[in-house]
Image (cartoon, rainbow, N blue to C red; front, side):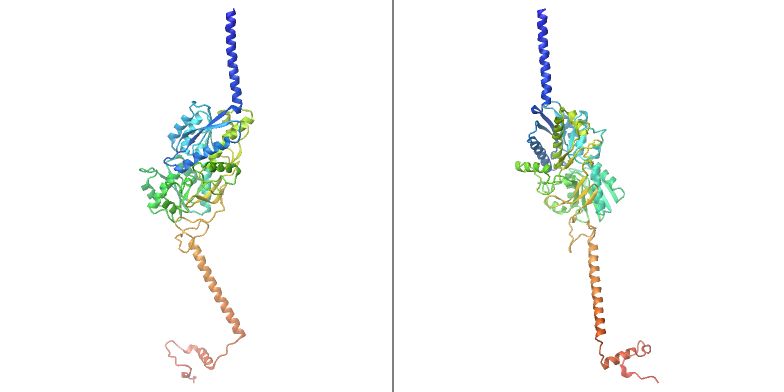
Length: 523
């Protein structure tokens, strides 16, 4: 009996110890002071479509965001695991599968990225299967808004439906009569091309071409040459492609003598991510491209306090890829990447305030609006909130806002704003290889409303009108002076005038003129 009681006592002690451990474990999970949370970053890397400088810039932006937000005396620490995805479907899937293997402590609560739609779609499927949230900062394909296929995917950027509307607004404002849309064999490119065509509708004539991959190139040069041969004057070429592909299209267009006016290229957000100062970029090609235009999502004003702290820290740390000094840092989705990282910090802050355990399930509920509170904060790119119906950036919280850009030797500069589908405040544009001046080769439509030929005719008409007015005034002055001061005629003048009015009908063609003295009065 005593042996049995002793055994029972030992069993109860072990059981009590287990209960204590479990309770302690739960208490630890609820105490954020002792917790480190982990997020994954499906980072871009230099590959066939992402330039080296851009990949470096994005990776530095992620590091800066993590360090700045961790330094703000929060009661927890966030760490990250990085996996490379490039812009490849297979690599995106492999990176997601590796990231979500439950071998790293602390366990993940979600992920950031990928940048490209193709990789985001393949990685997104893995995140959906394991019920993890994924917040992308640059994957814009409308397909990712399908909540049946991608219920755990969210984006701090508007989907391509709104970029297509922004491009359509630009086409209408510039009074472009014909456009050629170039796409490639990528989900981003093909989907965006479709959105552009749908947004433009019947407003202008649209031709769409799908470019295939060439030998040792992302595009088929021969195929491109055939397309550009069909492009006429005053027709814009819209490139719904990635930055490296845009670079290769431009190089081929220069070799084909299809890069100067009247050829004018209009770039989407992938094209305006092209960096003219990248070490691999041909300076002579950049010189030929000056004046090319495009659109990119607005964001990251340097005067925005929610954004300035990140750039100041970045500059002080001298991390590589620091964006150029200018008023608007809108070119490369850095602001949206920073806000993707901020999203997780704000979600955890909200869960802790609500006394809810931070798990991937509760993080997901906060993002889709089914958990405590609705996520909405002022971020580096503006008001960040997600549409539960699409997972895309909410247009109810902030109107779609894009910048109209033009290429300079060092960067893309803002030339106008496209707010809620309307292009406003457009500055003067100069097409590549043309100038608005006496020696201009530009004879097409002035994007600001008037062609150079029209200007010449207006100037000529103005001068002719001024000359006619001068003659009229001079004639009026002369008549006025004649009335005040009659002309005194000499005797010879009087005789000459009288002769001219004397029986003019009797003077016939062929008669000789011998003067008044040769005439006799009729008898």
